[in-house]
Image (cartoon, rainbow, N blue to C red; front, top):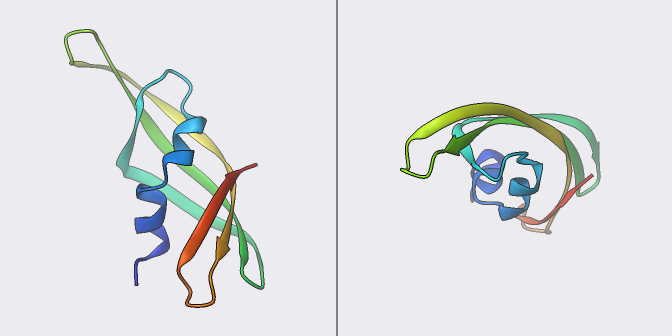
Amino acid sequence: MSTLLDFLKTAPELAKLCTQNGWIDNDSLRYEIIEQHDRRLVLAVEFEEIIVEGAGCVADRKSCYGRVRLVKQDNDRYQSIEIL
């Protein structure tokens, strides 16, 4: 069974929180559970977005954050994620 952090690291939906068309630095990804009801979770997530130049060099990093809703299946695996 994968952990919640593992699920978030592979969730393409989190890229919607990026502001500069960069990508998520998974090593900086953090979350906090804000609400938990039955099989639904609301999380506050934050991470650094990596922004690269045309040559492929890292040009900048931007802090990104937002809230997401997760739904768990009966087997405690996470099945869906929605940006709030």
